[in-house]
Length: 283
Image (cartoon, rainbow, N blue to C red; front, side, top):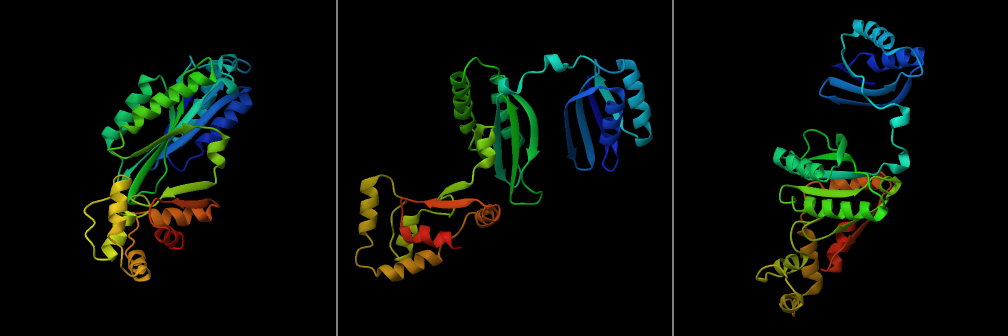
């Protein structure tokens, strides 16, 4: 039996529900709660086959919840304990989407269309940023379609990831397995140019030297030609000017600060100047 409760925050609906489940001898299979603004929704999957009849259980539940003014709905066709899939057979993934200010509705629509086209079921959506911040982000917990082998699961993930990454013109997106490894990762590696800082690292040096670099680097020959433009300039002076001109991407400094407080190790990789990468470590 699937039971759904909704109402204003501040009541004891979940506690009442658990008390009725306990007193009736029913078995709680699953429960989730989320809140949007000040309205909560609780969904609980309960197996009443071992306890009181469904009718008696529902009567007791409705009477107990009535003083709280909670809306109640139920579906008697929900799975029982014997129908529930074993934990080992359930494969999940995490889809994370981030965009400036707010995540566009078309972005979320495209994401859900891709998931649906691969029979991936969204189990929950959680906001991962605070309201009012410069960026907004959501995390989707997705149940993958049943497959016969790990190789099939990997292939499905690869195909979904490739399609989702095509949406990055609307925002940033990632897809990864939902497992213990994801929750225990403690190393975050950043690129320097156009990730931690705004701009190309070599362009920053050329600008500090007062040289027109004619666009960003593209290919080994172009990089070598642009580096040659710096010949004859005072290296220490140009480096100090380039470091002082570093402009960090919105939210990058705060992100790194929070990650460090949470115990993460951070690293910077760059094909540009080592001095800029070193300077970014101590900002």
